[in-house]
Each structure stands twice: as structure tokens, then as C-alpha cells.
Amino acid sequence: MNEMNRIAYVLVLILAIFLILMGGIFMIASGIENIVTGVAMLGVAAILFFFLYRSERIEASRPRLISQTFNVKMGGSGQLEQKRLTCRSCGAPLEDKDLKVVQGGVVVTCPYCGSVYALEEAPKW
Ligand SMILES: [Zn+2]
Image 1 (cartoon, protein in one colour):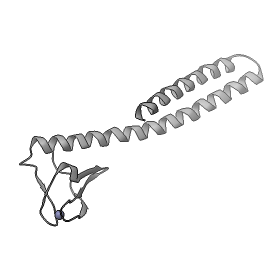
Image 2 (tube, protein in one colour):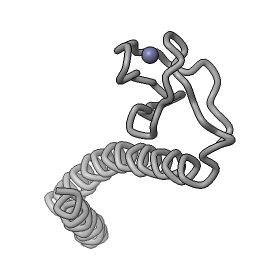
Image 3 (tube, helix red, strand yellow):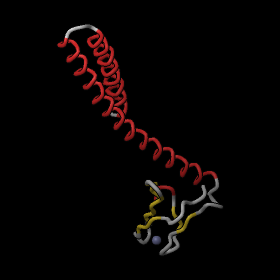
Image 4 (cartoon, helix red, strand yellow):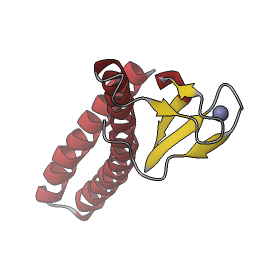
């Protein structure tokens, strides 16, 4: 799925660049129809770039979450004793799988008492 998105992204990017090149050629060529065609091509290219920009922003936010989760896992296994987390309600020890990294913080789901809450400050991994 991710790989397909990447391929689609590259194809649309190539298409947009192609349209800009063709649009430029049409605009340089004399004749009112050619200029109109060139402007239309540049317009389509601009729309494609807009969608690419949007999808890039979505893609950019995704790997960040993965790397954060990775860091949590690394921190959990690396310094287990020091960074041990316990449930705020019942005091049960929490594992990495009980933590969920979301934007701006860590959500804890306690497997013992079932309470769900967000850590107020990000733990120093
Ligand atoms: Zn608990």
C-alpha cells in the first residue's frame, strides 16, 4: 500500500513535470490556441502539484509516528529498570504495548484496571 502510494506519487510527479514542459513549449509557440493549451497544461500541472504537496504532508506525518514508536520500544528495552512506567490509577507496571504514541503525547491503556489516559509530559526516553 505504501509502496503503491510512492509509485503513484512518482508517476503523478513525472506527469506534472511533463505537463509543465509541454505547456512551456506550447506557450513559446505562437498562436492563440497554443497559448491557451499551454496555460491549461500549466494549470493541470499546478493542480497535480497541489495534490502532491498535500499527500507529501500526509506522508511526512506518518513516518514520524513510526520513529516515535520505535524510540519508545528502544527506550523500553534499553533502560528497563530506570524508565519503568506504572499505571496512574492502580500502579500496575506498564509495558511498551500499553503505550500508544499519538501526536503530542503518549496514551496509556492499563491492561489491569482498564483506565485510559494521556501522559501529561512526554517521558524522557
Ligand atoms: Zn491500572
